[in-house]
Length: 621
Image (cartoon, rainbow, N blue to C red; front, side, top):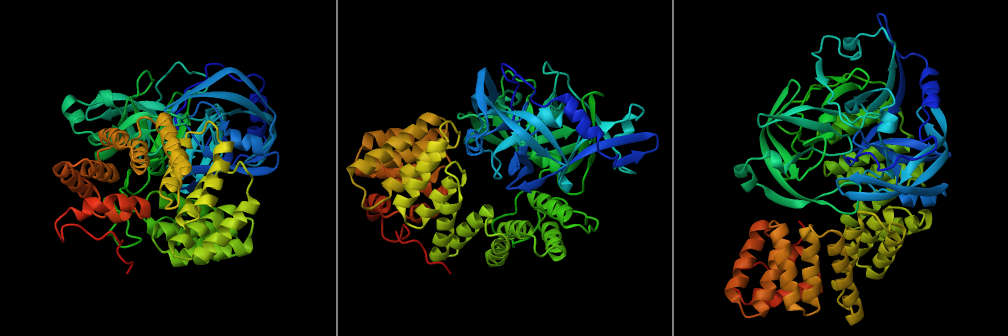
């Protein structure tokens, strides 16, 4: 996530430099080179769902946060501030600017924050952020990461905040390099000088511009203004680009001919595109790049030093038809050296999973479990690796073991509920979900996912209750649009829904559109809600907008085909049905909702025999 500095800084002592210095200087020197002593605060990082996650203690309660080099300040969600009953005060006009819009924020104080091997007292967090993935309830920003030099070694599951002795030479900062080539990149000076972002020169298709290196983002995102008119004509619309706020920016995708960053020149790089106006950078480079490099950032020296790890920089996800566990073919991964501690093995394995290096991920997690078979976290993370490799039965064994070791591990229980539901074990999934209902606080982010699972199990009323609980605790969260759309879709798909419920479904979808007006999927669902209520004109308007924003959305084309068929325009209906199937061959059976399938039935009946697949979804082999 990229955030710029707040309009007003928080008052008080957000991260007191004196205490930070004492914390750092109180550590034993872990790194010593000839005439160069480094003192480091070691922060273990685990990659979860592609997000680098660190665990901090909030007054003794551990909570996961996203390591976010793009964030000016450390931020937590309002829901977790309420859950932990943190003292909170007005931000006095404080507002953060993010890719997802503006955040009006408050200030929460943590009396005792446990970080690494130490504790800091009376730490202030900005309170006002969406959930950001990976289970994180906030982000650790540059007011922590930038207090000294920072080493990012995400490929091995580490971040280090480092203080170096004055007599250390620049080249000695990359202490791990030995005979490896070390690249030196200048940091671009910007107006935000207290904790400056990591902005470096980059070339995009031969054009030299500035890039923000952001561990809180994904791949590569570029400003649309960098592209020629010919390149802009080739842009493929995507869903909006989001960030910390409730809105979003229009998004597209493209493949860049060349990207040059330091010594690396990469070809045919997949990238997102948006309008990054009025910023100090024109390109955003995310965590994928960090996973393939090891670097130390020294704002005081105005540079970063970086080495590259083996393997591709931006690995492509394996093709759907590829055998499970098959790594991308772009570049081979070199074998990693042996480790003999379960924690480092686990973290390196999860980083390997983030690079789609399934062989290394499996080897590391297997070795970690062998060393510490009673560690529930190791079994949970090996289950994540196995699920990514589509080895669900083996993953369920690990999840069973994790929960037998630690029955209160809610992340494992939610993951097991999902795996059980997908495996057809409805009884087991319901059992896990009921246990979670008893265990979780009303503010827990998991209620949104629990609603999805209850809906998949056919229990609409229970799903609605979970989503209602989530919405009540997340009044300004950027995920509200998705949850409202899920609630809308469940109600309009209910065969027994009365007029009141269908009206509420449309209202939910309408509110989602208002929150995310550039998201074609939101308009698509609104179209189906209006179609179910018999508002053909309103449905047509919504489907038209959905197709304009997201031409790849198959169900919007299908819905518009139904509208044309009902209005007596068979040629237009047939043409839209062809477009829908070109985007998703099983678009009709994919609906899986009886009331919506009934709307489609007359369209299918009008087609020549044998031209269309059955309304019944194909049997699972």
